[in-house]
Amino acid sequence: MEEYFNKALSNFVKDFACKGEIIAKLNSKKSISKIYSELTFKINEDDIVQIIWNYLIEKNIVLMYEINDEKNQQYDIVKKVNQLGKVTYEKVNKGNIDVKDYQVIDMKKILSDKEFILKLDDYKRELIMKLPWEKREYYVKKNYFIE
Image (cartoon, rainbow, N blue to C red; front, side, top):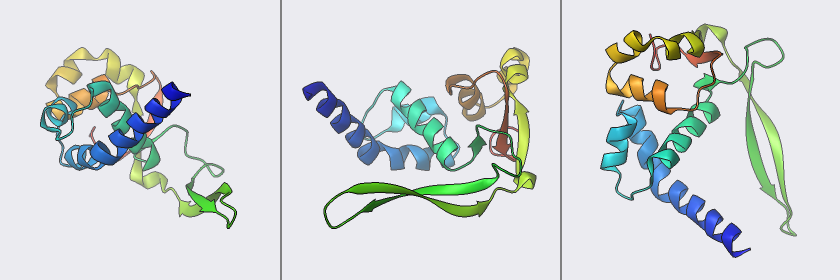
């Protein structure tokens, strides 16, 4: 039980103390290494990578699925607490994902093209090399980090 509490507390502190700063630096096109070296509250680089990956997925910058009629809806999960303190979660529709806003990126091809990767700046190179990409196609917001 104590280990679970310590892990939950650690995750809360990382989220509270670092997430906003990490995302702001990411949106300023700073590389993961640069973000790590500039953090006010130090956490390890693996945690930074996980925060960035979760952000890209949550904000639909990287889609883990193919865009089609059934899956092109954007949803938020809303936490609700009743008078007795019971917590429930509700899926709320935010609208459609427009396929025109995305490009298909073949990470299998990109990850195997070392010459291409070496030509990229640190920001783009580290997003490709350090994030947990599977070797498959993804829909990524146009011009987010690969043109």
